[in-house]
View 1 (cartoon, rainbow, N blue to C red):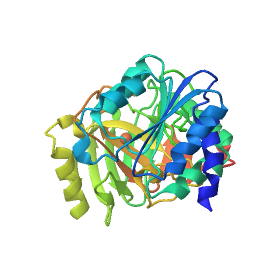
View 2 (view 1 turned 45 degrees about the vertical axis):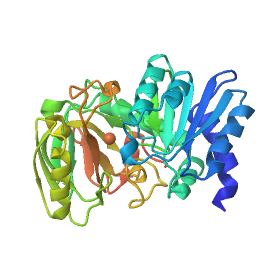
View 3 (view 1 turned 30 degrees about the vertical axis):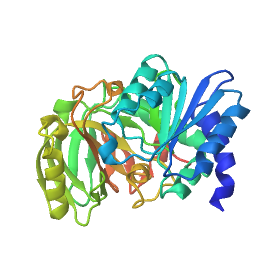
View 4 (view 1 turned 120 degrees about the vertical axis):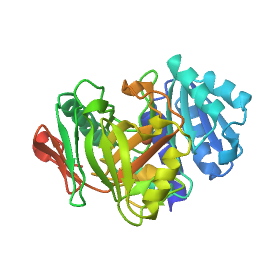
Length: 335
Ligand SMILES: [Fe+2]
C-alpha cells in the first residue's frame, strides 16, 4: 500500500520539510536507482505549491563516481533556492554545488529511500511532526545551558562533555531557513560538544557507517580531549580502526558532532539514516565537520558515525533520556 502514499508524502515534503513558496526555484534531484514515483510526487507537489519546480534524474552513482565531474547537475543545484535530494548523491561536485547554493541562501534537505521506503513514508506522515520539532527545539534549549552532559550505559559507556557555548541544531529534517541543510525524516537534535572536554568511554552496540553496518559485538572507544585513543572489541572494532585510519588524516578520529534520536517511528537495524533517528539512540560523528556546528575540527578527509542503541543522558545531573524515553518532567513528553 505504500505506493499509494507517495502523493501525500510529496505534498508533506514540499509544504512541511522545505516550505516551498510560490516562485521559488525548487529542484528535486533523484537517481535511476529509485522508484520514479517518489521524485514525480515531489515534482507534482512543487507545481501545486506554485514553486518553479524541476525534477532532475541522474544515473545511480557508485562510490567510484565520487570524483566524477557533473557540471550540469552542479549548475542546477547552484541555481536553486530550495533543493530536495532523494538518494545518496555522494559526489564531490554535488556537495560543492550544495555548499555554493547554501552560501547564497539556498536550503537543502535529503532522504535515502532505497530499500527503506516504509520508513521514509512513515517517518514523515505517521508521526506528530510538529510536536517532534517542538521537542527537538526544547532539547536544543536545554543543551545550550548544559555545563556537563554525561552519558552512561550498562555496557560500559561513561563519558562526559560540555555543550554550553555551542549551537544546538534541531535536526528535524526541515530546511526552512536560508542556508539550512538537513536529512529527513528526523528528528535528531545535534551539537558539537566542546572538544577538549570530551573524555571517557563509548561502547558502540548499534551501527557503524557503511560498509561496516550493524555490530555483531560491542566496540569500545576510549576518548581523550575529543579524540579516539583506542578502539577495542572483535572484528567490528578491527574494521572500524582500519577504516578510520585509512586516509591517514588524524582528524578522522576527532568527535565532530553528537546527537540523540527522537523519532517514535524509527526502528533499529534497517539503515544508518533510520538508526540515528530511533528514540533514545545516541550518535557520535567523527571527522569532517560542517561549519554550522562552530566546532574546532573543521574539514577532514573522512566523516563517519557510530550509533549506540541506548544510554542514560544527564544534563547537569538531571536525566534527559533513559531507556529510550525522554523525560516528560523537562517538557519532552508526548511523542
Ligand atoms: Fe555524522
